[in-house]
Image (cartoon, rainbow, N blue to C red; front, side, top):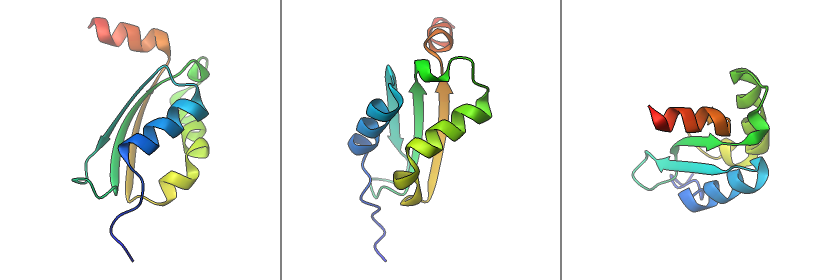
Length: 89
């Protein structure tokens, strides 16, 4: 089995933006480019009124194909208002 998942920062960023109507996406490949470990920050109005677990389920469902190909996927999800407040801190 190859150690490269075929998932890239760009492909993940595109998928998140399109499937989750994200207004801001930051993707970091923590696996030195082999596409096995990603940390993402997602800002989307789809998270409005949802608790953390519901947000994570939404992301996991939207990205299930990509997530199944990587070793580790860490997400932080914010509504636009939460993100704006966090940026002001």
